[in-house]
Each structure stands twice: as structure tokens, then as C-alpha cells.
Length: 189
Image 1: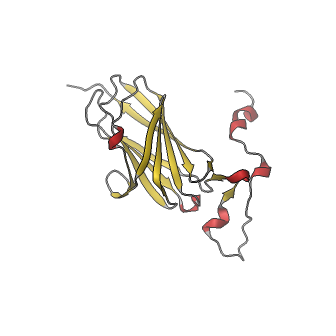
Image 2: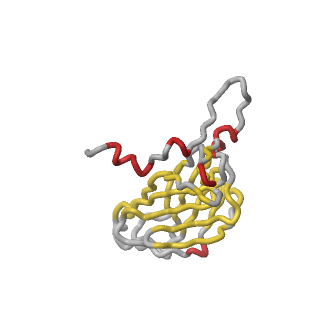
Image 3: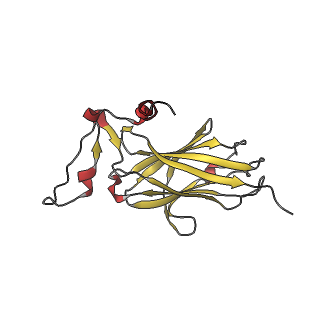
């Protein structure tokens, strides 16, 4: 399999860059006690955001008016608000065209929608969609990103999407949340 140190090297941070707080039961807990402070103004999530689910309203190839929903949890112990998301298609033959003006970010999930978050900018480069929010999402929020393709891919198969988040700040540290999977099928008559 190779050297494990080489595999983990891109994920490692020098210990001198991190600032930790040791838990003492005599001191009352507060969310700020768990913040990760990095040198030179770099911000990072203390509690890792989590990709909960990725779903579609229609998984038939070439279907019109489908929606793709990415539900994410930003835990209370994240201590930093979420400012930017990246969704990268890492597997799948076709690259759907999206109607970016319809892109939505809202609290809750696709069935239980809460308040909306205003999107500042939506951009695509290669296979990565970047969403910058006007108002960052606060810790302790479950939220959903709704993407709206013009139509589903032409080719059947599994389509994987890597999801990453960035906290608010001048020098945000990228947090990888996981992979979402959509499977598109040929219609059965």
C-alpha cells in the first residue's frame, strides 16, 4: 500500500501552528474554549462539519427539472461560521449544466425547509462549484444546498461529489466533509 506517512502528509499541520485548550472540569465549558487558532490569521473549524446526505428528486438519465440536495451539519463546537462551500464532481461521465440563478441554501433539509441564506457568488471551474455566502452560516445549524441541473446526465452510473467547507475569515482552512453519491439509471418501460 505504500508509506502511510506519505499518504497523510498533505493533511498534517505542524504542531507549532496549533493552539489547544486542555479540559479542566473545574473550569466551566464554553464553545470558544475549543476553537482552533492557527498562526498568521488562519481560521479553522474546531468541530468538523459533516455531510449528512446527498439526494436527488429524479434519478433517471436525461430527466428535466431534477434537483440535487446536499445536507450538511455545522456543529455547535465548530466555533467558526461557514462562509464558502465547494462541491466537486469526482466521478461520473457527464458533467451536468446547472441553472446557477436557482441555487438555494436554506436551514433544515429538503423536506423541512427553514430560513434561506443569501448567496453572494456561485462559480464553476473545471468540475468544482464554489458557493460563497453573503451571511455566513452560524455553528449549530443543519442546512441544505439545492443545485438545479438543466437536466440529468445522459449516461447511467454512479456520480460522486466531494464536498468541502471553509470558515469565515481572511485565511480560511479547508475542511473536507466527505463524498456524496448519486446514481442515475436508464428508465424502465
